[in-house]
Structures are given as structure tokens and as C-alpha cells.
Length: 120
Image (spheres, rainbow, N blue to C red):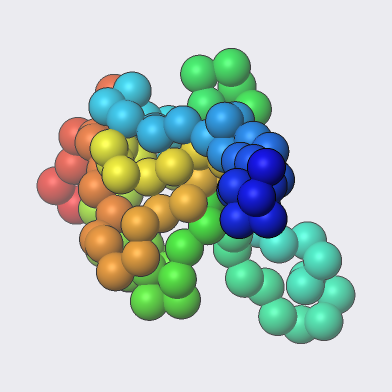
């Protein structure tokens, strides 16, 4: 093997972790808000955003600061409800660390049962 092809083989072995990644797809996941308990004692609370998968495991949504601000505004405006609405994105990738939201993309939610706009 040449040095270049040996490096290529090593790169493919190191990339094996990517085999555990998959697209979120149309099945989506249930959006959740989880308060960051580690910050409560400091006088600063920041919600973390997670998703419940089909197997009921909650995984973090990995996104940019602007996407986090966008979700916060959607929550304040009543456009997304924790525990009811589904995050659906064919480009989002589920990894062992969480769900990677595509950079620069607005998050799309599908209204879940019971969150049909209360007309308040």
C-alpha cells in the first residue's frame, strides 16, 4: 500500500463512527424544553432544547445561537409547544451526541395532538 492509500484506509476506519449517524427524517421527534439545572444556582437559567425519540430517549438539539433564539421566540409566540409538537427535518442528523440541526436553517415543527392553537 502506498502512504496515500494507507492514510485513506485509516481515514475510513476513523469515519466508522459516522455509521451510527442517520437522518432524522419525516418521523421526527417530540420537542422538549429542559431547564439547565447546572446554571440555576448561578442566578442564570437557560433552557436547553431536546427531542424525545421513538424509543423515549431524550437527546439534545445541537444548533447555532441564532437558531436557539429563533426557537425561544417561537415558544414565546405560542408557535411551538414542548412535549406536543414534533421537530421534523430531512436534513437534520441524529448522532451519538444529539440531533445536529443544519446550520442557517429555520427549524420546522408539526403541531402535535392537543396543540391546535387556543385562540387566546
